[in-house]
Length: 227
Length: 228
View 1 (cartoon, each protein chain N blue to C red):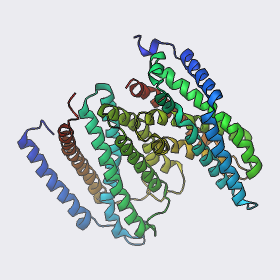
View 2: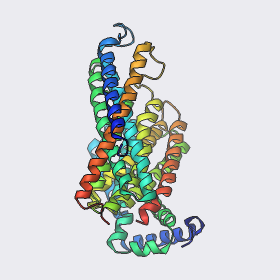
View 3: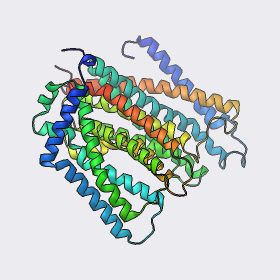
View 4: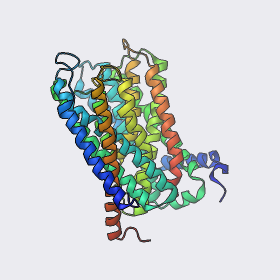
């Protein structure tokens, strides 16, 4: 085998992304599960609260907690599905470990962006968050999504090899995700009208955590995948 | 300490016993605590810090040790490293729990309530949850090699996050009730005793770690886990 560093990464990763997109278009299991959960949660929240004004800080937490659990419903299956359908071995032979991680990460990112395309408009209409700093909010959203996707992908890879996959996922993903989630919530709060403190601090925190998670993830994934 | 000469080991253990006794004697009887009404609401209760701070230190040490031996396991595939990593995580959890409990006892008299959502208090509780999940992950994998690999990878991912919550966040968020370096002037004897206590606790950690590792390896051998 060629040394891992010399083998191409991007082409196999994109091929994997295409394959997952195709499987998703045929089955739509992950997207359905996530969107269904998120829409139900937001609508239930909005109905229960009615016309009660919700402080912006609480709204930011609601948004990210819903995104976290919706992602848990969908992204957790990234590697479990391969193990269950018996295609994990074929995937292992198809390319270097890092390409597999990158491909799965891209697929989960795409899934999350699709989820947010449904969730955010609904959230804005039903909850009417007083967002004052849109560029900042979008930056927080992008970096928070990246943190969510990378943590969920790594946790999914860990959990796919363990028993009791579903129950374990939230517990395993939670630690990897909390720093990102905390940064995203604080950052979203900082973008609301009348918020104190800039958005730069949380953004720096999010960016450094994204970098840390991805670096460590790509370094250790090979050991996990070739296991 | 498996290979250390028996006499040397005995001597070290006696030294540790006396050092620990001296530290405790100093912490609870000798050190004069700050005057009431000064920096602390309950000056006499500051004595628990001589145990609380070293326990928090060992918690961090345990999590970092688990990370280091986990990475060594990934590199060498030696089950001994896996056992060392597991034991370090367990000890980190144990001492973290002790630090949390003692911190709550101190918070109750000093800050008025056992739980104050202080960033460092909350951060430590979160970090402990991470390592509870670590043990759950190990429990969910039967194959020893796979268990070791998953645990090592998880430790590599969770340790930076745990350190962020124990060290990063309290400095990042305003309003921590914990003392920051230089915030309160402590007497030289206070600092010396604290320093000595921290060194003694590290020695206890190394000893416990060696013993627990031997026990774990024995139990693995008995369960036929080390045969390949």
